[in-house]
Image (cartoon, rainbow, N blue to C red; front, side, top):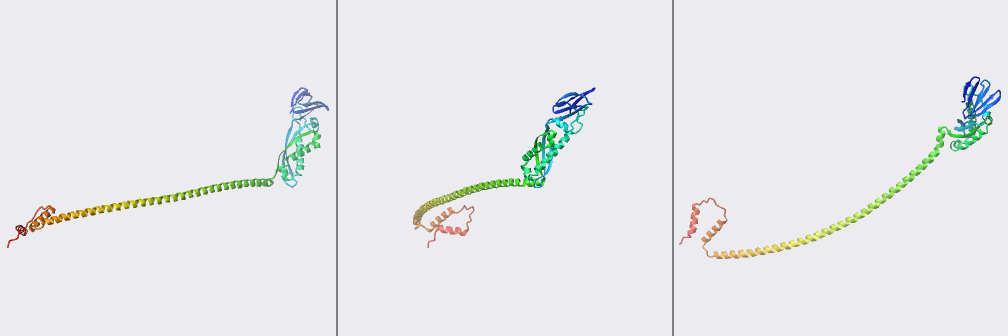
Length: 334
């Protein structure tokens, strides 16, 4: 918006560098240019101010594809007023000489024109594409066609509007159609994921089988070693038993021979002692031969008394005393 200072009978206008001012008075062009400043008479001046900076206009167009599917095209149109004087003649960019503000809404009018042209071109371009082509790979071609159509639009060219470019932000179908279009890609991705999972599982199975085979081979080897160990232990035990039996046989034989020797010695000793005792007994009997029987009886009693236990009390009856005295006196002579 221009800055206007009012003075008696005159006013002063200063425009921004991005605003192109056009001053006419009495049908004659007085001042033109961007960022200009000048004096003017408020009662006779007609001033327009046209922006000359680059402008961005977002546009949303609804179109139908060649296969009769509704899509939404979101795009941004970059434009500028290439011929400000022509624009000032075709569109009302007049400013109030008192405030410097636009008297009308020229930018809204320009945006409406650009929006209608861009939407029409987008619909025409999408109508030649299938929904899959428009959604997935048609953005570059679509933008080129819209730019070409806008730059050749007679209304925009005659108005002095220059189109700098078009950017396609998105081409969207409805939710169901987008899910249907996404399904093949998702299925392909899922197939690849399943294949990778199967490959990984196959590798895991191969590794597990190799590990199991290795463990089985180790177990077989350990079992073979254990069988050899058991056989060797059995052989060792058998050898120990044989050695123990042989040692026991030798010990038993030695013990039997020792017992035989001891028994023979004892038998010999017994025979020798028996013979000696027999000779002694025979000698004693020979010594007692011819001895009076009473004497033998007394000797017998004496020997018996040595082997009897101790007698604390002895009772002598008359009969016993008579018999003993009679034996001592001897038989009466007849």
